Length: 65
Image 1 (cartoon, rainbow, N blue to C red):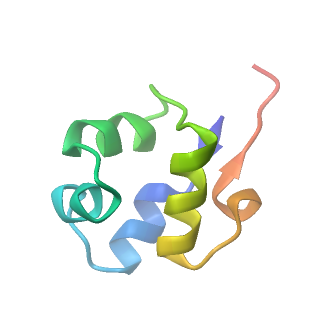
Image 2 (cartoon, one colour):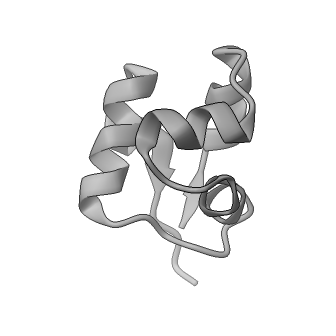
C-alpha cells in the first residue's frame, strides 16, 4: 500500500515524534508507515485521516503488489 503520510505530515509542520505523540504511537511506527514497511490498522488509519483532515482513500492507496 502506498501512502501520502510523510507529505501531509510535513505540510502540517509535525516531526515524526510529534505526529506519533498525537496518535499515541511511536516515532518508529510513523517512520515504518511512511516508508511502506508497515500498513496501519483500520483504527490507526482513521486516526491519521482525522488528524490530517483527509479521507483515508486520499492518504492510503492500495497497490497490486
